[in-house]
Image (cartoon, rainbow, N blue to C red; front, side, top):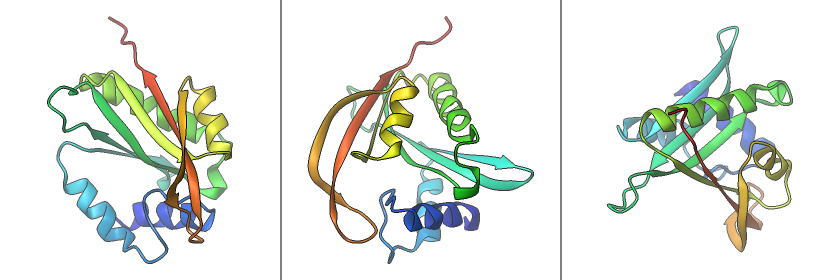
Length: 154
């Protein structure tokens, strides 16, 4: 939990909320997430140090067992632009397919570098919702919604 909390705190400091505010108990947030047996939590490590994370939250809807939301994607400041994020998202997609999840969706603050990152990975921007969530500084920000249909190797 401390490694996940550190990554999340780093993201908050960079202006990315990932579903939290500066007042959020990040260790408890991730402890609760890990306790959810349906959720996948992936951790990227380099030389034994946690440098990236991503959560995959399968849909609870009975008509959408194929769908999951990708949440809390973060790469430590010192590891950004090194390929860790791309490898992490490839692992997310591989793990999703192994569990029969073929549609992934996510949100990120619109107009950020994250938008270009997800688009480069083949995610399609399906829309923008104004004033969707608060950034760490308390300001309301628009969210860009992205989706990707996964194709297995079968």
